[in-house]
Length: 610
Ligand code: ADP
Ligand code: MG
Image (cartoon, rainbow, N blue to C red; front, side, top):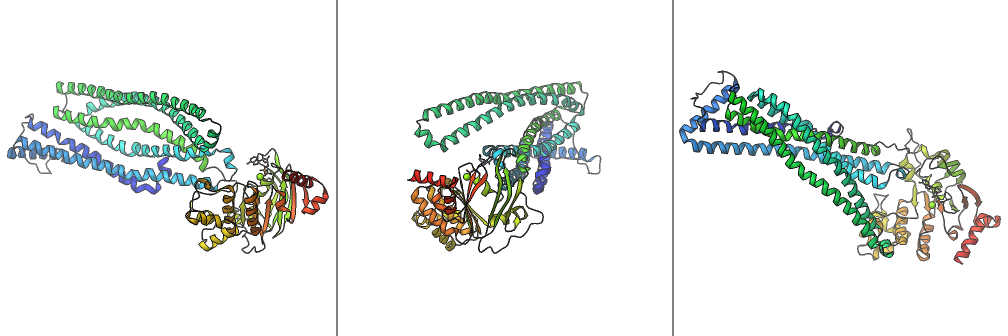
């Protein structure tokens, strides 16, 4: 269960909680014990004259009670009844103060454990999220994972607390109180034992009905949140299409539904309190009646003050008993949440490191080699997106991939850093299949610049130094200069310390792209993959970025996926892709002479740019 799985680092918290719970229980029992002699003696119910007994005379508890009474009668004799009453009341206050402090301390011990478990699970999930391959996220939606990180983890937290309350706090209290009750009057206690489960069952049933509806409300709240998020994200479109009113209507119907659900839930919730108070009072009344009858019949050793003490203890047992009935439900809910979390935590990562990895050569000055041997690849196991790919890329070469969108260019380059594993055939890097290296080693020799540059909401410096944690300021500046990014970066208000904003929102596409190129420059990878790095840009930014890229491509192996053919005329080899196959290959001039698909593509582009 939760505790067994997550509690190990928190064993001292649990020990502390157990100790303080025992202390709380004892202090509760004894703080009310002060009431008995006050009632007995002050109201002259007890006319025995007590004498001090030695601890060896009779049973310990009898002697203790006797001596306590002796002490009280002595005090009354000396300072009078009223003053004694005041002393006893003060003693009650002090004992209660100690009791609530102990109760607080037990919770104090539990809190770091609750929050610690939550943090542990979140961290485990996050490192799992980061480690899982890109392919995982086509099946598991992003929002789903977010709700597991927030909602499900929260439910697990509640369950951890409930497990502790159910296993430690409530049982200790209940057992302690029951013990006192049995000592006071076993007959009454047997009766209570029959009564309590019935009351508990009624309260539990009411509680369950409430919880079911509150789940609906939680789902509805999720819908509301996602509508709000979607609207804020797409606010430009909403405004451009004058769709404010439409979105408002959608949103208002959702909040109306949520209000309707919340109304009925909260009405029932507010009903729960009077209900349980009422049921509790019925229980007390029944015990009162039954206990009173026992006393009147004179059948038992319990007297009126003892009975009042008994009732106080009985009253104290109701709360933990009530809580105990809720624990099961909370734990079950948490288990369900844990299962959903485990689906992520236990998801298998198909991209594994080999058991005996080959070491990546350290010095790849002239770039690395890449080799595709009869590669066939399918995302879903049915439709082949790549077929019979054979391609040899020598160190230092620049290879271009061109072709219509959807022809498999991105898929092909994604196989090199092992974002996916091939089904048939092999991809080799530096004379070994990619699977022979550790994933970390393999990716350490590659730099990737995509069509959509990804920036993080951090400083420009950290965005550039992203894959190179030891980079100095000089190196970062140098990289920015090579990437044609230096000028606009120092024009921002804090230079390299300027925040990039959410996903780099404060920069234009071309600026973002140049920052991400600077990142690749700084990493200085032997193998560079450029997947349509310039196609989202206007002509002017493209010129700047292209310049930066050409500087970057020197002295390394480069695979360029190009949209605009003018950018690749100097490539050592151009591969034309169509429906997952390489249909033509050669240099720019060879392919033009060949008069095939490539020539057709070039003519189309010169027409459109014409
Ligand atoms: P290109 O980069 O040449 O435009 P892609 O390699 O992106 O082409 O896509 C090739 C084919 O694979 C397309 O038909 C596309 O729909 C499909 N595809 C791309 N990514 C995925 C994915 N993650 N899951 C399933 N199919 C995909
Ligand atoms: Mg693509």
